Amino acid sequence: MKKIWFILLSLFVFPIVTFAQENIGEDDSLAFLSTTGYFKTISVYDQNDILVDTATIKITENQYENEVILPSEYGIMRSIGESCINGIFTCTYNTEYKATTLSTNGRHINVKTTWKQIPKIKHLDTIGFVIVSSDGPITYNPSSFTVTQKYDGNIITYDGNSGNRVRKENGDGLVTNIVNTVSSSLEVELDVIIYNLPLNNTVINAAYEHAVTTTLTATEAKNFTYGNYTNDSGKTVLGGTFIYPNNVISKYDQTQGVQLVVNI
Image (cartoon, rainbow, N blue to C red; front, side, top):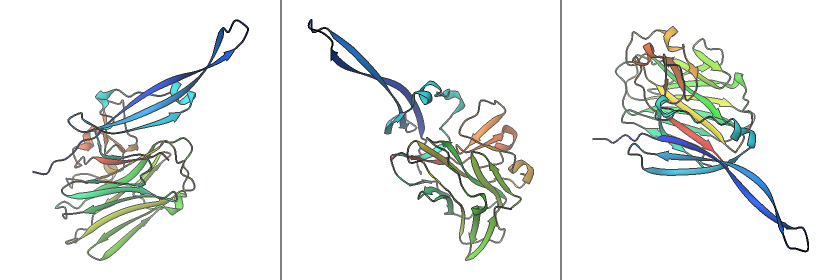
């Protein structure tokens, strides 16, 4: 049986105080001058709560004072299937049916899902990404947005003017109909050109959610916001990326997403 790993990220934020001593008189008494550095440690655990990776990054005092440690009951990162950190610019999460890759080269944010098995239900799937956090603003050219659906050697292209595009301040994505005639190969790819990508403490999540019923309407499919957590009991995060009303999530396969932590 194929083993699927579930990744849980925990955040630990702490100050470190360092002391410098200065001789201030003939009696050799010492005065201590202190400075404080603030750090955040990201720990990655598997489904057995075994530590598999960590990264510690320096943050500002303002970030420390305003850091939110999210309660675990919201399942903040349990919808992330793979997390890649420390300067890795591409990350892939694999399941038995499909593989989703999130990558950036500093000029593009790219999300690509390749199907290993053609799905029986071909309906309203959702692909997109969310900027979880960054030390600086990430801006991108809205008109550079493209989504391509490649199937059996054919290509369908959606641009930024597509009525199925869902763009918010912190994320971008598309609800796409899977072509009914696809039989042998299927790949859906989203790409946007970005103007700047801060190379420290930039966290991007991405996901591809497959509709498992044709009763899902276009209105329901586009009725989401972007985020990796919610404290609204009437909503649920899918793939660490899309926040949907609870009455919609059962219409998706609820596949875990992928997370890229850029920290050079």
